[in-house]
Image (cartoon, rainbow, N blue to C red):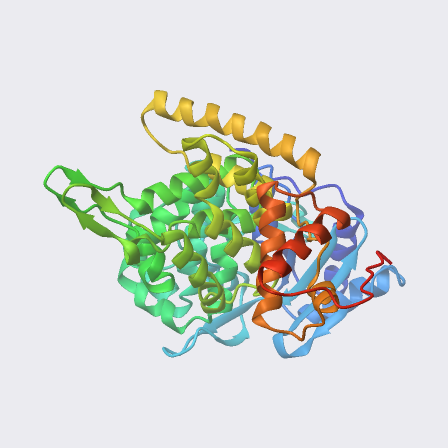
Length: 479
């Protein structure tokens, strides 16, 4: 692997000049250098100086003459400088750290460059490039980071037991980098994660979820989740997902391993370009299968109602994982609830009525739902898989045809509760709800069009059947 080259950006020369004037050696350290070596884009530039990081940032800011305003974070001993050519640059003084057993927040004091590099999580993040005039651009590699990059290995600079016990979030970061980069975790480092997994309990859920989401968004997320499961971390941070693992067999009846099925669905969604929340829908689509698993001697294993129970679980799972509880959660909940519906359509004659109902319930998420359902076909029987995918094509054509004709995505019946109350001089009641439901059912069944005139005529019939007559002089104006 070639040595990373510092880009020819004036800002790096400016930092070098300021560092020389202050007599403080300075280096670009960490992920930016790693990504240069891997030819990956990187937005984060960290500059470490053996001295006062804030003073260096302010000196650079003065040289830029107002082109970038330095933001100081005194409590952390860091400073941030936005630049047009290189984005945000963070400045910090070299430091060494010591930890208490009950906290991942270190005691920090000034240190040497070697001490600063040693406190990094992995050797591939302990690389540096000099910003000093004497050896500008030279590589600093005290712990074999370049070798580990070339062998695609994740290894800690120091004893991994100490590294992970000091800051247990680094165990999640190990899995995250392995998943993002497709790297292996070096055996001693892996074993240390297994030994120290219980330490993850002192890390805040918010920090864990940041790393978890990065695993979910990685190119092949199943790799990261397999590592989480094999190390025992998944059982601690997301036990409901870990419960999907395993196959139970009675006689000739065995069900598939729902953990590995879920991971295949997740990978399928990722390969199709699914975003973070569609990937979470893939993770959760079968989450309630362990809770709904039943065995019947003549039928085998069933998971009846797992989609409904899973959908009911989604808000609490999102709350537990500190995921957003707004629109994203509601979309995932909807997809979990509906994920069997298109498959059911494949198995039977596709009627306009069934398609209308699906369009109505899925709304603007119908395309996401169909992508999830295609991803859910993981059968190893190639003929069966091809047949299902072909039938899915027919369902999608029908969806398109009905949508163009009836415009049912997020449709609202023209008859509202207010109109019903006005027509029959009713107050809010169950009767009003029943009439409103009857009109909606008639529209979805195709009995009437979602237009005012036929809907009012139908409503009059329904009211008459309940012994209701329109109040005298009732006239409904569309306006």
